[in-house]
Image 1 (cartoon, helix red, strand yellow):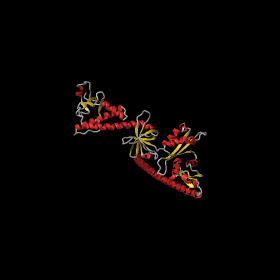
Image 2: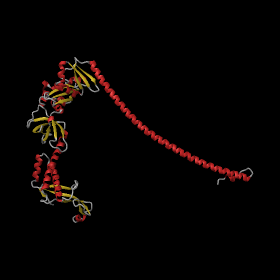
Image 3: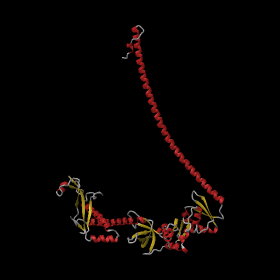
Image 4: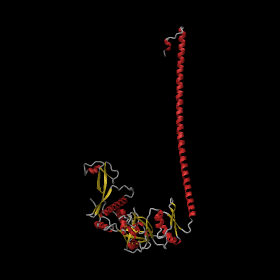
Length: 477
């Protein structure tokens, strides 16, 4: 069998495997695909006037010989009586010269390797380009399989370089596994982070990109709320043991203004009567929460107690402000008025509204901060009543419109049913009329026959003259 030699094939596979962190089998598979594309390019240059469709070379394959450092091209051909396509078929008589038992329809594998000199420069360039693409595809496939299950977890990352406003970092899926590049976009960075080459950070694996695209396949974040949850779970044993649970987290890592720093509110709860969930997260002299704050570069964190009562929960969420009263003015729309004293207004609202904004995200309620000294209960109640009444009327109108549509639809259905019933009645009446006509015609025929018989009877009676009818007169003809 002929072979195209590739000097240094073994070393090339070893080097690619080491540099790209790919198994040798994956490199060999990519190389076989690339060489087959190169062979296709060689065949196209040999047959300029012809045209090959995409499935033309499906019966061809490349065989690598690592020991001899070369490759062969093999083709599977079907045995036929008359050959119409020599690339896919072979004559029966030609095969029977070698194997007498061959039959039409059987398949044979033939060596169609071109000569060393015929595999030209263009085919070699095509092979090189396809090999690079196939190696990238193999890398992406392996990365996706390796990190798919780690999506939504926190990993250790090392800064490699900077591209535009993104930070390219190296992360590993576990001890002993090779590092893989990940991208930390600008919007996922913390404003207080000072990224330096080879500096390490904890990052949240946000998603693993699929398909072919430029750039790293992994997207990591330092601004995601999942990072805060992980850091608290790592620092607070009660969370790890499920004695204390994190109910909700609201985080603003990149505030809209530079005058406002990043801030997080976290709601915790416990079913144990003897455990203080807030104190467990803060730790002795704030040691536990301080470790989290240090990892997040001084981000402000509020730990509050969760409550099933919305009013209590909203009051806790506005910490550190002191709340006088929480009015759930519209529970259906989850709208609340929070009354605070004048000296607590700025604290409850927060700088540029950050505190009340985070409290609203944490609780899921629309919160309006009101000065308790200036709050007009009657006026506010009237406003809410008007809003509720408008909403009720709108819902009523919408319901009536839906009912009208349903009624129109029922009328259409009823009209169709009436038409069908009318058609059925008309058809039945028609049939009854036909039956009645047939019955009348039959009766008329019988009457005629009876009249004929009476005439015959009269004639016989007259002929007899005795006034007694003979029996022959009653016999039917």
